[in-house]
Image (tube, rainbow over all chains, first blue to last red; front, top):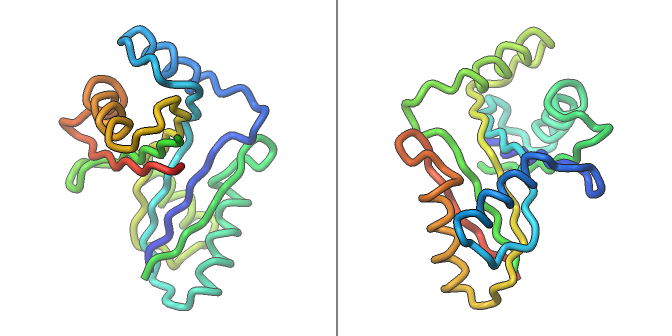
Length: 80
Length: 80
């Protein structure tokens, strides 16, 4: 089973990397951009084939290690 | 229109950040993980409402700035 984990800064947290990308896009004359947020995507191959257990395990990984839950949100998608 | 851009290292390119995460998960006794790849997710708000034009513009952004196409692949998803 494959887990796709998208980690993004919470709304309201300053995203300096996003601001830098936005500024760079402006410099390259891409003018139709209103906002840019940069996050992480972690793709993981799991040996677990039980979806409920896999989701529980990945949630625990996010809480313990992968995300900083003070400033980041995470979303977990499981694919067979 | 919102563009979600997922940028990942091409298969075969060493992902040292992924290896570090994998190792850290092992240390925390998450044993069911076979492989970890770490990529970027860029979420962008566009003023363009035409899907074909937005896709063309975002593809150009990826080629010019967002992705290093020598070692990275990118996927674009557009959401209204």
